[in-house]
Length: 116
Image (cartoon, rainbow, N blue to C red; front, side, top):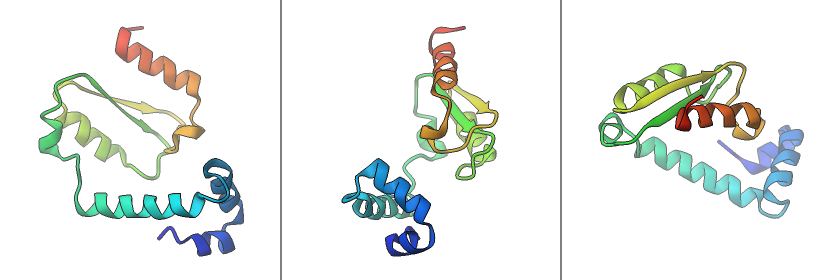
């Protein structure tokens, strides 16, 4: 899982992307810390149904229709447990935020916060 040597060897295009966004001399450290964080979150989830019920402000739960990291059911579950939760499925969007149309996402967030 997130093995930098394997990424370098087997997925050179992704490796180049990681080097570009995390600086060529830091991407391995970022990858290691990301792996540690993901393992820790898997073992000790911070957001659960009970913690969601304690959130006392409006929350917009967004998911891209093409997201392959989070399921629609997981997002619906979060929204259902948030007292003021609203679910928004963004058609054609993927999980990485940097690949999202920032203008369209900004409009959705503004509409949620201040109204259309």
